[in-house]
Image (tube, rainbow, N blue to C red; front, side, top):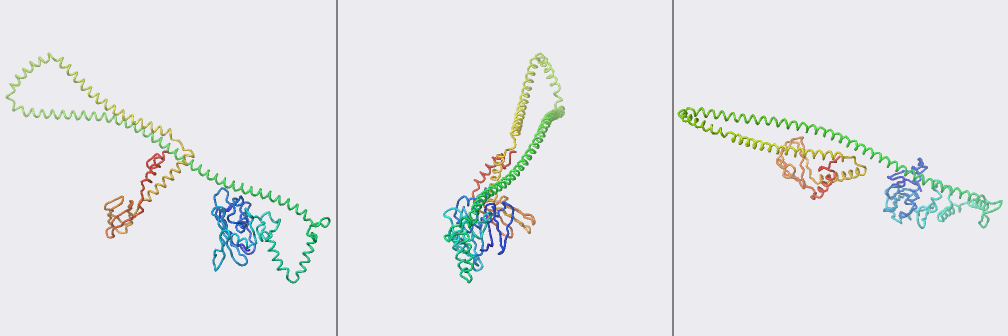
Length: 511
């Protein structure tokens, strides 16, 4: 067999797709530091050629990248006895196996599923255990040709492999001069074994027993080292994952710190605005007092002007009536005399009149004070409302604290939901953009800006509406744009609910 291509995906330390090839027919070297995945590539060849795609167990579970829910997948392209094959296998989830053969310039499917697994193994005289994953005993000819790391010697060769080797050697030994080869083989055999096939003992004993003991010790040591290597690889992978998680946490912390600093700046701006508002309120009260004084002066001036006008009008009337009533002066003089007499009588009753005047003056002043009291009550009510608003703002400032990580996650989730709903609402609206090259007159029948409009070259006209947009262009005709008809009321209600959760109708944050 000549290996040409190897592709792995979701395979131990290779979470993403990795392609290696095209390999040379001579010597190929794959080098890298410990833990870079060289042994994982060797294992991909073994599992891809000799294991059933449906096999399960701890060894198969270890093919999955640590901490990831991926299905291990391997693709092997190789040349066998002059024929090019390609086998693809996926383990664990949606397990499958497909064997293809290169025919007429392209790969054609040859077998699938269990048949593909068995056909691939038959090319190497390999077999499969009763259950679980294969080991070196089941690799057929590959257990002699392949030497994984730390497994240079092998304990035994499978019966199928021995039979294949015997058949190959049998063909070679029937040639001329094979008797000499057989004689040398027999001499070497009798050097260590008796004619009955038992190991020789004593002085002629072979060093095989010592070698076997040393081999067992080496195998035990190899198993311990393999366990240490597996633990090291698992620990290295865990360290890489934890380092990546730590970097993500550092990035999240930086974002939170930036957000906190932004909110602090907003709080400082709010405090400055609150101080400006208080200054404006003080200025407003001073202006209101000044306005009251000016308004009173203006009213007094108006009253004086009215009195002056009335007096002037009375004077003119008297000037006009004097010539007409000159003859009645004497009569009026008599009347004046009578009036003076009556005035004397009235003066005798002056204390009563003065008391009545004082009562009338008190009543007028009471009415003025009552009106002024109502104005003061109205002003006090306004001041009370302003004080309540100020107290609510102060309470909001006191309650304004930086959210914790849990609140930030909730805010981020709500913001993503708000943006997703807003995008869905925007996508439900039909948008037409018209870029005229010559002056044109538009008559929009259905859209957000109905009516007649003019379009100038170089200025885009944007028309939106749902479920359709209809407009007429002079010299061109009627244009209709429609989209899918859908009820967006539920989306709008969800969007408003999310916005209310943010504290604002437009979905803005309360921070």
